[in-house]
Length: 197
Image (cartoon, rainbow, N blue to C red; front, side):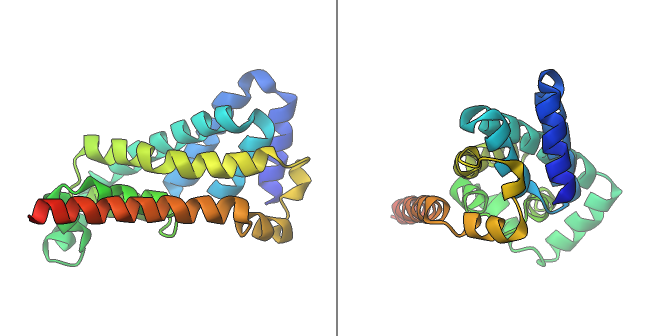
C-alpha cells in the first residue's frame, strides 16, 4: 500500500510521463500476479479522472494479458496444455465451445484473480483474438466503476486498509457490479436456450 501511495505521489509530480509509467506499472503488477490492481485503479481515478484512468488501466491490463499469453505459450504453457487435455481444466470446454459470454463473465465478476484467469484461458487454448477482446470488453465496466470511485477520493492517503475495505464494499461499486453480473448471466442464459432450440 505504501509503495502505491509513493507511486501516486511521484505521478502527481511528473504529469508528462505519468500516463506511460502508470500503464507500465499496472501491466507489470497484473502480469506477475501481484495484488494491488484495484488500489492502482482507485489511484488512477484520483490522479487522472474516471475516463482517462479507465483507458490507462485497460491498456495496462491488455499488455499484461498479452505478456501472460506469451509466457504460457512457452514450455511451461505446453505442460499446462497437457494438463488441460487430461481434463483437469474445465475451462477447456469453454474454449472449444466458443461461448464468449462464458469468457466475458469471469472478467465482469472480479472473483478470480486476473493473472490466474489469464493463465487458465491461455492454457485452455482460447484463441488470442477471443482472449484479447473478451479481456478488454470484460474489464472496462469494472475498471470504470473502480476508477469512478477513485475519482471521488480527496487524497491518496485515503487508500488505507480500512478505507479500502469500505470503498470496495460501498453500494456505489457493489450495486453496479451485481447488476452487470445479472445482465450478463441473463444474456448467457438467453443465448444458451436459443442455441439449444
